[in-house]
Image (cartoon, rainbow, N blue to C red; front, side, top):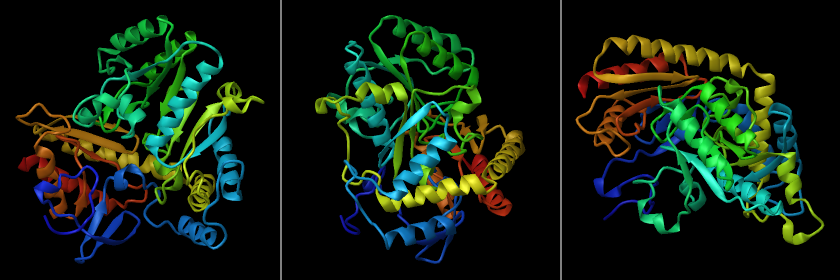
Length: 418
């Protein structure tokens, strides 16, 4: 084995697939060391919202780097974090009054799970079961894997994972099965929380379900006093057509997980927002009842400066107009491809569009078609990373008409070729 010492995530190095070296980026474009210009059609793993190297965010990062680079956040604070917390509570549902910082989507989920279990422990109630949805994905740390789908992602680590209750994915015609299963688990009295990806399951295959089902799940949880955790790490910041996916169902979670687009995709940062009762359950004059979670880089000032700039962009620029426009363009392209019989289940939700290529295999993440498709798109200077036989497009909101046309033309060519 030769080459770089880097061990890349979600990469089987034994296949010796090429790993392009990117030197710089702007907007929806990546520039490589060998002189290629590549369209980033997946927002570099769903994080980049306004485009790479957005001037306002880059300026905020540069300015903050000259003032305060890092600060212990246990018992100390700084202006960028205060600005982010104030900005979030202003833009998010008013019931979510508390902001807890962490550094990634997985850790925001870990924090949410600990908050939920800590809430019931503080109340002296023996509720410990977490309920999850079939095919869900919430991250790759131990708690996040435990509440995700079991399979190839986490099979080697089964001994570390805790048991959860599971409800079926609410596919069309199966919604009542999902709701009945949730009702039954909630009635048992040991359920602490339900965690869901609202409206669309990302890594599970861009599976879309209805807002009425999401609303009904929230109502069932409320009726039984079960905490409702919304993992909006991917779905937040406009991806589904609204700031939060939960807005489309008219619901507010007890605990909300945010990351990815929190900094516009520029730096790693996450928050877990909670309602006042969650915070109050941990409030005490007894130090042993504090919320025991942190990391060295909690609320890093430079990352917070990026997030504060992102919030300013949302306040002052027509972001939702860009989201609405991109959503319409995505839908139009799926309609154009509708004449082909080589794919099935075309679907859009806001700025996200997906379709499944017909395959001799059963589909799923490990479908052998995926690496062939990735190579096909890479040769056409388009960054797409199919989920098995599912091809999806989730670009930065700034992508131009010509750039989006190039992406979908490549997909159309792939539909015919495979």
